[in-house]
Image (cartoon, rainbow, N blue to C red; front, side, top):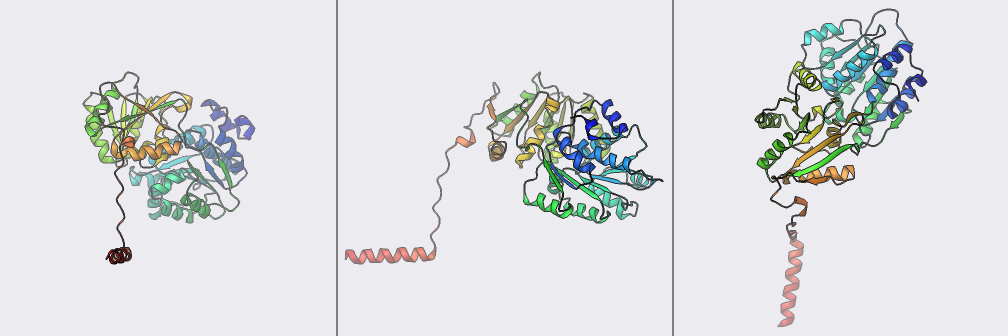
Length: 417
């Protein structure tokens, strides 16, 4: 199948060809036809499978099929959980509307409010936004969503993780009832995702799924380095970053404070390194991603704000110095490297405290990750899973059990007498 077989507008096909998109991916083949037919859709697809095009193409086709006679408010609304994902979706839309009159707009936090308020006052066809900033602008009576006929919720499971469920329901209430709603998620598992979909999608919504995300691409090499303590972890990270095959890497941590801590460690090596987390200004976050893509930065220390969607073609390594709490986050982190079938590596430096997280991840992906030892930095302790388990404490006896035992003991003594 080619994009021509999907009966898309020539302007869209031209834009796709310019960017060398010729064969639709599995999620695009499954999702685009029902969306073009006007159905609501619930789709499961891992990041890196082309799902952005899967909802952007039919949304743009919808506008082209129903051109309006005069300028107006948005007809398509796409919500993304993070600024980076929203920016990437916006860039994709901009590529596709290069040969037509359609106009898109990006609304995210970290950008001056007044500037964005002025932007939404102009005529817009496609609005891409993060939930918080969208509602902030709407509350200031600066946004009209009454003409939206296509509503897309990207990374629905991530939306739930970040606590955006109420904001999305509020946004949904601002839209016309007669609209098409689609929801894309890395996983459809869990009661929360199902309840979320039930509330927002029609009863006859089409469901499609592309390969469960419980795996890491075969071309990505995975290794675990056991660390005895935080200092050992620091020595291992420095040794790994000095390896010549590490051309560009993301070092993942779990908190904003850890970003600053590990930035200081890496900078002692004289490596060009920056940090990225949710507290940074949007302009700084955009610049850091640009610097990575242009090869100006070798190492980016980041929280899971970088774990999904952001495409860095030259990234060779992902290094976890702190293992994620959620097993699926490991898969998303790993997906930042080895893009488009290229090789990549995921190295995890794990101490005893985080070893249970490793166990959850291995159960989730269905494989034991290779244990590696860096010469000169081998662990002195046994692997945590091989340590002897402490003896289980006997449960405390209840009052009734104590009374029963005392009665039996008294009877036994009486018999002896």
